[in-house]
Image (tube, rainbow, N blue to C red; front, top):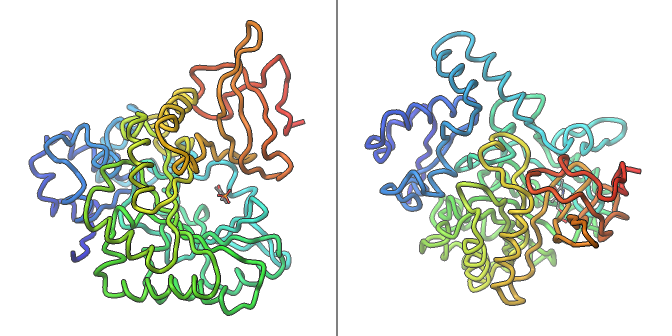
Length: 422
Ligand SMILES: *Cc1c(COP(=O)(O)O)cnc(C)c1O
């Protein structure tokens, strides 16, 4: 399949959209001017069920919908169309939507020789995140994506690493880093020749402390032809093979939200092609209202992923950014979905962890609800912490059926602070 990209500029080329009611098209234009929109011919033609588009999870993942904006903001944007004020209004609304959650700008950016390195995040001691500047796009933008500030042109809020020298210099100074996670955007939007620059820099650096290279990507389900028929597909696969031949663990972190993303032959062929290079594929996704907030989706996905040789890794809670109002579900509902799905899979799929919140102090997982005498509490723990001492220390929050994010939870038993805040 030949790649065809769609954005607001050429959205009229999407034949299937033409048949949709006018108000749907209007809301795509309106919301799409605040939250970035992009799609491609594979997603549109192979994944979306256009006969049931209103309830179709892939349609909702791809096309902005009216309800994603605050109703008042929606009307303001719509009435500003074609006018000079639109720009400022859009900037205002985007700023309100918490473009960089979990203090990632203030707290995760590392220094090298007294200077900030833009394009690297180092939050957990073993793992460094790298954001190559050419990888700050995607083959399609998921409407829930917490990376939207990377795409919406707010320069000072964008992570982008131009060359690999700073990355290598930082790795030399930080031997505790075992994992380099190349992320974005989506690094697999890059040409093989650009991706290779970052990977070769690690392979040729002689740094022995790095053992694992991870690549976070949505391509496996949203553009599987990246590994099949693109002009540099074989270069990509050769590069993967070179990494594993050199003795590194290469893990492709595939973002898969819904089981419908896994039904095509192209997807299955891409999985095979990647596995043949010696790379391992791990899977992750947030749980979101209107898309995947039911347990069968997860148990079916995890089982099929294991069957195809992938390792279920994380179920996340949708981040408190962008259209959180549209996607969020109560934390306890997320827990229930996770538990009901986990119950239905055998041990080989129970490698998955969650539901997990990537909050400012760390990855906090909801472990369950406990009853102590006549009081109920939510049991939580860190699976990754800004301070690694916090990991695996259980702690309790007041029972709360409504809370949708960590900052809404309060410590149990009238404590004023959680243990890691003291
Ligand atoms: C999730 C995450 C990682 C990776 O954590 P692992 O426990 O190694 O999977 C690294 N950095 C940040 C900022 C993260 O949110």
